[in-house]
Image 1 (cartoon, rainbow, N blue to C red):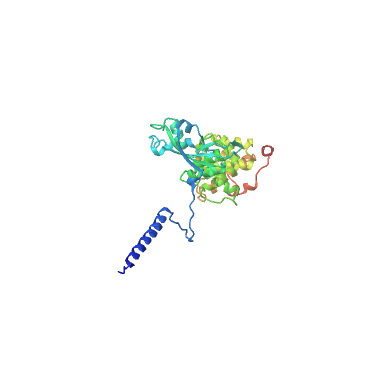
Image 2 (image 1 turned 120 degrees about the vertical axis):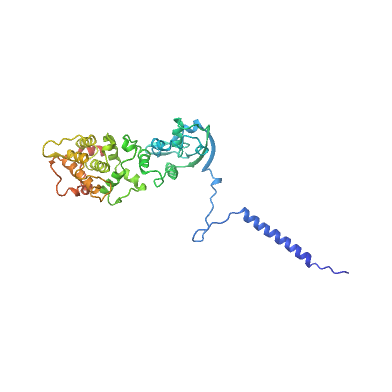
Length: 367
């Protein structure tokens, strides 16, 4: 009987199985996820948001979209539109994608209760305002909505900040409006506050009154909510006083906020004096003038500080202009007149944090 050499057939079978095995391996690698490693060697996990109910998308009629409320911490949309109108004048496909947030559990912010199911526009508010005013060559028949679902107001605010965070390109002045209206439920009235043009003065006032908390030359966007909160009542009172925004540079803004903090936001004499500064209403009759006259005269004529600047340590900077104005506020409040500031005028503002005046009006308004 003829003997058959089977080694060739065994080799063929082995290669076939090996090919099938390798094919399975490569197929698995193709279908699987390539791991991503951290610097310490740990694998970064994947998170299946696509299978969650947190993110949804759909088309929405324009009328329905236009009726959605702006997010409660929205910036100054009106001011933003003034700069964005040109590039929003022509409707583009990119403009049609919008983001909203749905509240899944009832929650409260600043005393206002929002029921579960409430939807906020967290993005596209400037576009919505522009479309409502006919500022574009066309209005989308529908918008493509990306909707987030969150169970708290704080989480919605956090989401909004990913679009317009305090540390984003958005200017701090715009952010001030959003902090006042969204976080503190106050809508600015004066042009100066609407445009947020008090930040340098506010920052310096905070550093004078709360040096353990704030002591920085530059304005940190992340610190703005706290600084606004520290001077909230004073900011509101100052807003009511401002009539001529141009008459309040940052030194006088700082002085006004600090004066209201020291003497109280309902002090009639102080309010009258600050209104006179606003209107530059003063008298220089006689050799001795009251404090308001000294402040107004210097800010009109610029003799002692000819080139006022916001640089703290400059000869004409905030470390000198603010205490000068504070010195004369004190003299005005005490009914004293004079011809020039006393020897220790430059240290006046540093002392004010320990000199807050208690009045009956202040007690009644705090109780």
